[in-house]
Length: 423
Image (cartoon, one colour):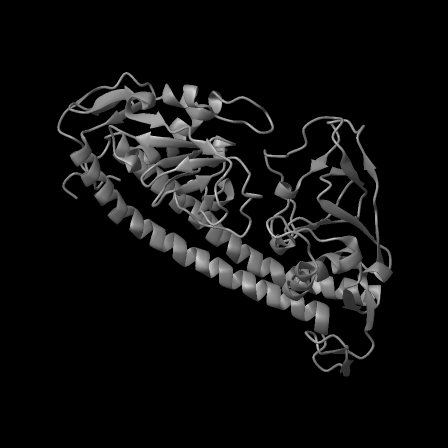
């Protein structure tokens, strides 16, 4: 950011992490600049636009509507917002979820709905999204597993700001500069998507056609697959694996616990998070053992399935499967293929929170060779996908650096460390 000049004169802000700010800027607490809109209702039509936490992208301040909106019915209690309000996600504030509403509607009660009165809504949003302010908010949260911020604490946080015309100039310059970074992020994101598509096509081909392009083929009897190697077999999942339906509510919280949030969508990888949702030792959990396949039955379109490397307990939103006549990895990769996912989805119940059940999954057909050939195919897959994964990791690292650069640039702008008025 050396190409940006500083303001002509500065003064001490009185805020330790900021230090000096432009001489003409002011300092005030959030509650002096914005008010909490605490309007809630339980009689809002489901036709009214609804925003859930899952519809807000972490860190970017962007609205990204999903299929997984969690409003259940017209009599659900919701928050009410109006055009120009700032919706700030108070649950797990480290996720940094805040957007400016472009219309009136209703939202999850896990949002604080703020009305900016003496500052631009966007200034308030960007301020709440800065890493240092997020750290302050998190430090005042209650709850270890599901930390929540409250208005009393957020309202006490100090903001530095110029007058609104200057804010508008700075924000316009910010939009122009961050658009360049966003374009690079979008380009790299698209590259990752293409690599993911290539990776999935490679896996699907391997588990439906094998490795030998010259092998004699036969009709599988499964429309979306067509032909398979002549020596391969076809069987339903329930003939190859069993459901382990062991549940307990007396498992120590020291026991390893896997929640749906700990499994990366589509990749089959275990990525433990801080947001594990097990509440206490008397919570009912599923039991799994080493080598079991844990398949996420809630919202199966997310494609969450991992192979356990040890014994432990898990959310009851997993089906715990024991592969008995096939390699666990073969079963996992099969369940993660897009076509099988589509079949599973078609048998789900529930519109907002669709769930798959063992009866339907168990009836799905699998094509497979004997286990030694499965192992050979999977070893080859590991080799090929490792190359793709390395490229994806490199692109992801680049995106992380760009996002850090973006956040640092915004922080510098809204704390007055750089002068964007004339940009």
